Structures are given as structure tokens and as C-alpha cells.
Image (cartoon, helix red, strand yellow):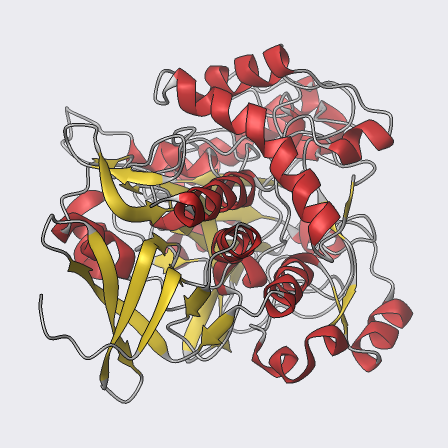
Amino acid sequence: MTNIQWEKEVDVIVLGSGGAALSAAVAAADNGASVLVLEKTHQIGGTTAYSGGVPWVPMNHYMKEAGYEDNREDAINFIKRLALGRAEDKMIERFVDKGHEVFKALHDKTPLRFTTPQGYPEYYKNLPEALKNGTRSLDPAPFSLDEIGEWGMSLRQNPIFPPLTLNEGGAVGGIDFQMIAERMQNNIVTMGRSLIASLFKGCLDRGVETLLHTAGKELVLGDDREIIGVIAETSDGEKKYFKANKGVILASGGFEWNKQLTKAFLKMDITHPVSPPGNEGDALMMAMKAGAALDNMSEAWWYPAMVDPTFEYEDHVMAQLGGGRNGPNSIVVNKHGRRFTNEGTTYNDMPRAFFNFDAVEFEFPNEAPVWMIFDQQLKDSQLIITMTPGDPAPEWVDQAPTIRELAGKIGVNADNLEDEVAKWNRYCEDKKDPDFRRGTTQFENLTGGGASPEANLGKIEKGPFYALPIYLGALGTNGGPKIDENGQVVNFAGQPIKGLYAAGNASANPIGPIYPSAGGTIGTGMVFGYLAGEHAAKSN
């Protein structure tokens, strides 16, 4: 394109403002580049700010300081075990070798701080290749929004987690209401909001400019098909042209909110994204037009989503992280009223059973919504979505005095459901689930010492009985443009597209369609975002 009237000219343009994007911006600035961040929405932070903000990083220095041992070979073998051949060895090794260096650099050069959460083990501790002591996940330290001034008002809200760290019960465990009140009064944030605010302070300190309400829509190609800029669109529809002398880094999230793209690429449509609206595949469509190779396109960070229809966030009914499916006194059944999986496995793994195909009946019998069936015992002991123990069940929850009547309300076969509940109760007496091995994986009782029949098997016998639908949700997609060891987007010949980089959910996850433990998305996103920023700044 010639005769372009550029709105602004910089060395590196970063699309998005989540953990991967801001890590890229910091790295590019530290290597001498002028950097511009373009954010589509009216808030900074993307999905990261909305999340627990926990990155998973092997051999990080926080682990060493906490006295936990880790080594390169074990980390690589563990990732390979989970990847099942779906990731390149060189990318796994690159993440393991550079990840801890990136997080040490961010510690040394920005206000970003973490601790190693105590009592929060690896999700797959039951596997022989897993880390047995400690965790590779990191817990963002509390951070004052006063450090970023008026930008604090633009930090994405997190409606899920209170301002507590993971260690303090922000995601699990008891809630310290006095600490929550004090932190809110003093403008202190934790988890994903802390991670983003800390990184954003690093960007402000480096003179990185950020524009809100400005969505990257199209890449500008030079005479040799190298990427030289971005065509952006403001919230009022105005087009603006931004010149990038050294590179454009796509880090604006996945495509889980784009129905056309999810239908085209995923195994099943995501009916309830567990992420903020705005992740509509803008980066994916730009990369495809530029000739990018794609990878992991049928995969997402799956989540068994549950919904309180009265709870909204940004004009959408918000899918919840749920609760109860891995506790006692509950099972999950399909549309025929039959159990079909171990209900308590990790949130990324449990929904994979939704994709099973019955070639005789020619159907997906486990297609969502499926139903969590539970009794008054569970209702009295756990927070389930927004239902607190002791409070009456809201009107939107199906309940009945008998299992047969409950089956009629939710439209499943009553004989099958009664049979499954009776069978489950016998398994609880025997303290063994021969069908799906409930009570055997670490995640089922993650912070309580691991799964056991006592913790995870409990009879469904005390009425009234309840049913809640579970939908196919996702924390985001993990397929997209394929990247190399430097975060450069490659074409179908495996050659880097000059001037184009990607990281986070805007790229294909470099270690495959796996979620190794808490923070499995954020760790790789930040590491390859940082490497992309560093490489772009040093390019000619």
C-alpha cells in the first residue's frame, strides 16, 4: 500500500492488553523499541484480568526460594506426557528453558511479584511424571491500583474472585471478609487484576502508549509482503492507520465469542464462554489473510460451565466456574440419564467426554447440556454457583422430592436416572467407583490432600433432590496462527512471516492443547509474548 496517512509511527505495535500483550510490550521497550498498545475494549487486562492470574512456569525462582525442587528433564517429560504427541519437542524445550528466565526478568525489571501458593498442588499429581512436592503455579502478590493512577479506573473488573490471593482463599478455601473490605477500601487488587496492573505499571514506566476503544482489524503489507502496520477501527467506526517499523504482535485473545469461527473450527460449539466478551478472533482473521499456518484449531481451554441466569456481566448472562461436581452426594448424567465420565477431573478434561460419538445411535449422547444431580446434603455443605448453604434454592433450580419426579422435570429417562443413583449409592457403600474411578485423581480433592472415597463418594439419598445443567464452556480457545521459538508467526512452509508475531490465545498454544495445572494458559502466553517483544525489537 502506498500513500498511507499514518496516524502514528512506532517500532512495535501490540494488539491486546492481557498478560501476553503487556509482557511483549515490556520486553520490546527494554530492548530499545518504541511501543504502542491497541486495546479493542474500554478496559485493559483482557481475559487475564478476568482470571485468577496464575501462570504455570517450570523451574521458576519462586519455587526455589520456597524450597521446592524442579528440573528441566522432569518438566519436559511431564509436558510431553500431557501433550500426547500434539506439540513439537523444540517448543516444549523452549518454554521450559526460557520460561523461568522470563519471569526472573519481569521480577527484576517490573513491579510484578508472585509467591508460591502453599497447599495448592499440581492438578495431575496422581500421574507418575508429575511434580510431587509444591507447584509450578505462581500466585500474584497484592498490588495497589494507586500505582497506575487514573488507569486504575480502566482495569477490567473481575466479578468472580474477591481481592484475595490464591493462598488467602481467593479461589478456594475460607474467605476473610475483613481483609476483603480493607483491600477494597485501600484500592488493593489481587490475582489477574494484580498481574495486569503490575505489568501495566511497567509499561507506563517505559513510556509505552496505550489506546483504548481501538481494535486492530487488518494488517498492512509492504512490497515484499512483510507486515508494516495495522489498520485499526475505533469504537465509533473511524479507521486509523498505525505504522510498525519492526513488528506487529497479535495478543488480543482467542475466538470463543465468534459463532462463525467456533462453528467452523471447534468439535462442538461453545455455548457459554467463561471469558469476557470481545474475544472474537480478530487476530486469527488477520493472520489468516497474511498467510499464517494454523494449529490446534479444534481445541479450546474447555470448561464445564454453569449458569445463574440472573447474574450478568457486560450485558451477557455470565457463565460461572460452578461447583459441586467433584464433591460427594452428586453425579453428572447425560440426556439419557446415564453417567458418562469421572465428574471430578480437571475442568479442561471433564468436558472432553462431551465429544464421544455413538456410531450405532448416530448421536453425541453426552452433548451439553448435561445434568449435575445432587441432594440436600451437598446443597447444605457447598457453594454451588451462587447458591450458598442454608439459603433456599432459587426458582431457576429444578428440584423435586424424588429422583423420578426430578427426571420428569429435566426431561431425562426416569428409569435410567433412578438406576444410576441406586448404582452410585452402592458404589459409595463399597467405597469404589468401578465405572469411572471417581475418587482417584488429584483434582477431585485438590487442596484437601487428594482424592479419596471419603472425600468424593457420597450417597444421593436426602431429599429434596436437585438438578443443574452443565454447558460446554471455555476459558478461551488455544488454536490460532502457528509460531516459532521467537514468537514469530510462520506460513505453511514453516517460514517466518516478517514483522508478524503472536502470543497467548491469539496464537496456537506452543506446548499443544494441554492445561498442565493452574495457569496453564497464562504461563505460555507471557513467556512467548516476552520472547516476541524481545525479538521484534531487535529485528532490522
